[in-house]
Image 1 (cartoon, rainbow, N blue to C red):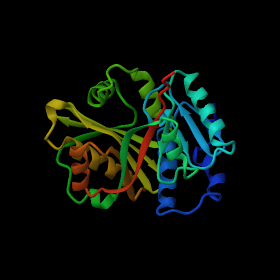
Image 2: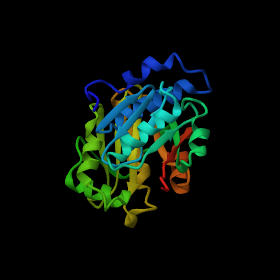
Image 3: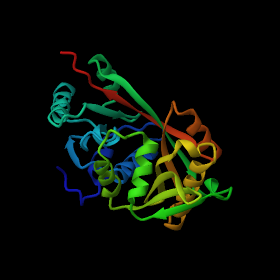
Image 4: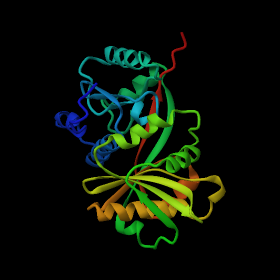
Length: 274
């Protein structure tokens, strides 16, 4: 297990000089490092330039390999170590891939080894001032920690009723970064939730969602704007979020708020047929 008091971004920096340049590499590196610090897995291990993350199987990002630079031991050996790492913890072996994944032929190699294409996600960005161009009309309460009511709403919104809410809560609060838990309210009842985490110039918007009975009442929009406004108060100027490419309603909403796609990441999942 890594020393969680050391910022995860430091685990990456020693490798950056060895990586060839690609379009927007600097932005992808920055946002992925920030996302790692904002959504910190309980356990991490370095395999050369690969970061192995494990969090009791809760969330894909926190239970996947981020391959920023070469593993330094050959792909066959590295994959065997990855599979052993996750299998020994009862977690599906998985890679989180981007266009800067290293080595460059990694995705093709994983395909040749039978790793399947998983969830695809857009990283979208916007200046905070653009997000705030239209005022928020709905009441949004900002909490420093997730309350029981907030967690109950989150579990319903995220459709994770079968998973352990305590593990999810620990994941949400583990990062030492400044964070907020937003609750959009209608008639004093929680109608939607979201999480904001500030790191430097950026505020990340996580887990934005609306309870079914309150949909089409702009709850998610209000929650997103309030988190962005909170981020501005904390010194951030830019905002980012992660949204599944297949989630058309969410992509349209974020587009109306001024968010634009920056890059994609996708997962490669291992399935042992033996």
